[in-house]
Amino acid sequence: MLSTRPTPAERFDIDTTLRTLYDTLKDLDAGNVASYIPELAKACPDWFGITLCSPEGEIFEIGDARQQFTIQSISKPLVYGQALDAYGRAFVASRVGVEPTGDAFHSIISLDEKSKRPHNPMVNAGAIAMTSLIQGATASERLSRLLDTFQRYVGHPVAVDMPTYTSERSTGHRNRAIAHLMLNFGMIEGSVEEQLDLYFQQCAVLVDCRDLAVIAATLANRGINPLTGDRAVHEEHVRDLLSVMFTCGLYDYAGEWAYEVGFPAKSGVGGGILAVVPNRWGIGVFSPRLDARGNSVRGIEVCKALSRQWRLHLFDAPSP
Ligand code: GLU
Image (cartoon, rainbow, N blue to C red; front, top):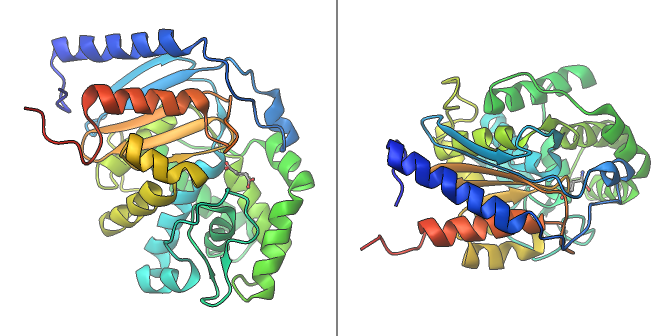
């Protein structure tokens, strides 16, 4: 139904679709705001925003699309891409696999002891391994490198939300356990606390729904930010990012997501979902009520509805 350069009539249809979806889903109150990171519990459960960005940079949005929240696990594919760009596929493959685990994001057991690498970069173990590869002589140089990469994706400077960072830092004992286990297996090197600090900061970067849609549109546009023209990730690695997002992006819901929705995505416990329809759309949804697996309830419904209505599933037969 959609071209990426919408005509005025198509634009009207897109706005109407978003308005209808928003009105239908805004009263859906299933799920709970994440509270295992105490600062996240302060989110208003009713916040709800949807943004679409085309690979040409055309933006459609509704609701709380400019409300900031922390990126959390949606940072993981970006840091995976940064590692691929810095070290190349072969080295990165020696540090992290690409196998879905079907486990929850914070699973402690998802370490492949035989291959000495975590199963994939979308679960916390693999993500921490990727963060540990961010280069720099000092902690602040490494953080700057990380923020520069995020900035290329969103098209403006980004910052770490200090309250969320310190909140996770003082309570993130499960991640601490995962990191120590990885140090024991030789999967990461250096100071565990320094690696975790950087990981917690990466998760606490502030974004809004529009940022998510622009990041997604950058990936839908082969790695070039459609608003700035800047390259955020090498073209040959976009395929790698999207592949792991497609198979591992929604934790233990990843299989059902691929089946029902059918395009790559990544969720975060801050309530965001970023979804990529290659060459067609970057989608950002924000609603902090999460289901038991840590995925935004309304976010999933929005993507399901768009997929169905606009036939966006990658394996949909072409429209008659
Ligand atoms: N910072 C969170 C954690 O490591 C990210 C989890 C998520 O968004 O799924 O627990």
